[in-house]
Length: 81
Length: 329
Image 1 (cartoon, rainbow over the protein chains, first blue to last red):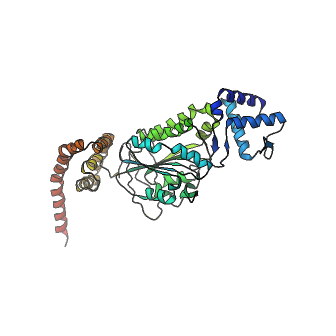
Image 2 (cartoon, rainbow over the protein chains, first blue to last red):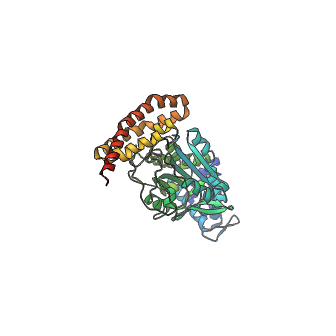
Image 3 (cartoon, rainbow over the protein chains, first blue to last red):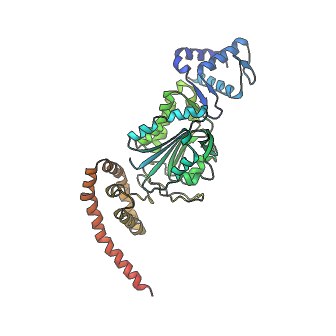
């Protein structure tokens, strides 16, 4: 995720603490997430200078395809709103 | 309104269905408060047998709506069996089970190209709202409210076209809450039998005769505010308590075997039904709730009409029959 998008997502999470913790799920893959979790992952990847891709370990979790899709969708969304 | 039955399918056997099950919680109470009859198949009750039994019941008096909150794919909609997903609607039974009803699925991919929704419509399902790809759900009241907008709009008697617009707007209004809303909206698709305009959940009765074989025969085409082939007479049915009452059967017989057989009669019935179906469901619903009004309507309105028509048409039928018999060698 681009630095500008990370900043914008952090602002959104700070402004919407309740919504940031809402559990969401992809009904086919069963992948659950919250916006706060997505933010934590992208911030951690940015701090470590790691490029987010399949197989990378962030916050003790292996990043998978479904996770990358969620991050991509979040970035498109945060840029739009 | 009392003539529409809802089926809610919301199993719960994995994390995803915990979300969809929760979205459907409370829906039964809401729809019942609006005067509808509701079957809520939750958790293990959402098994293929229960779903098929409900869908397979042929009742000419009733319009049916299915709300499916569950797992789906382009070739199946899932229920639950032995705490696992089990196909309940698939290409081999979709035409038979969804003919002449309305379907709303919050499930992945049921409306994909050449998928289940498309097959349902080509088999005579009136409307199928679903998604063309996998979608997301949220464990949040705002998401639940969004999904319910379509159902509430149907229950309030809005046209399917209006219901879709209401759901579309609900998704758009929540765009700032999560990417999920626009993501789902971009994959949402309504398929209907033509004509789309003015179609409501209580516009048509189920008129199909279900059989054990799969059929792809099209249902009678819906007409705005009424339809050819609809077997219902709301007020007479409410007055006599059953669509099988001899008086109701007599009225149906005049319409289908008398008036509908001539061009002028057909035109007359079309015009009459266009007007009649605008007010009769509401009147029938009041009659169902108020026995005094029902009694009044039967004695003062329906009986005089029915017996006058019997006085006119029965001798005509009798004469026609005699003439026909005399001609026989």
